[in-house]
Image (cartoon, rainbow, N blue to C red):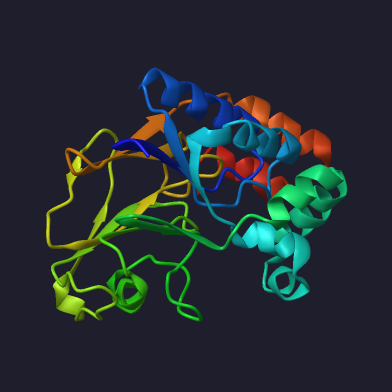
Length: 257
């Protein structure tokens, strides 16, 4: 694994956004990519998105399964979703090839890469899997056995840091700092700390910025930076509408919510 890698998550069947992000990754000279799950669900191009991720080959240094992948195969995971997400999963399941379904079925639930661990939602089983605040992070840090834990799921670029560097230790609420991440702002990753890093969403951002979001982790300089990439939102919306998917999936792309 190289010292700089791209972190992508929550593509959600949005081929237009993923194409734009992969092009920017190449422009930035980034070879290695970590994908934090939810490649499918919601969007109208699940097969194209799975093919693009699979085509990364050895560049894909980490790939973990998201809850939308779980819902393709697990009735309990499917039942936990809202009505819009369930409708999209039914549609997606019917349109993925057996090859793509088998490939997604075998994506692991987590990954470890030296000083990094990666999971889609939370490193603590049965915890609040949406890590939106310091309360959730205080629980999640009990499952952070490495210096850095990569997560997605919330569709919001965030960093949680704690000076409690002991693996799996539970920091107090006041020992955690939470920051919303802004475009091209390099967040320092201090030695002796632990971090939970979220790159936001490629295909369905929910931080009031409709541009695709991904992260750049520089292990040599010890920084994490968010990239925001414009893409053809209107084309993605037309694809959703033509597929007969719920209107909510289309409308939220334009507002990033």
